[in-house]
Length: 121
Image (cartoon, rainbow, N blue to C red; front, side):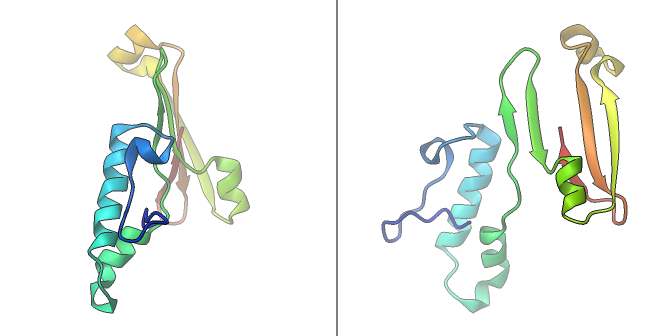
């Protein structure tokens, strides 16, 4: 997405376009919008590709403990044809996790063929 609005030469990013209201996501959206604003033609293909990519953006929920996700779940990745391997780590394996969220869990969804991380939950 280029984050262009229906008004000519106006782009939007961050909280004004709705969820997720997350600083890192808003920064990524702003970078995409600026790249799209200054992409003038075919000679700017790198800028255009960067501005128009449809990669997923991270989501955070400020609870105790915190919660967040990025990308595909194992089921969705498999339905899309990926050869998936899934790994988990419990939060009690690190000091902060033992203190604040001993029951927490991190799950990585990875493409077994190329090692690309498809999802983090």
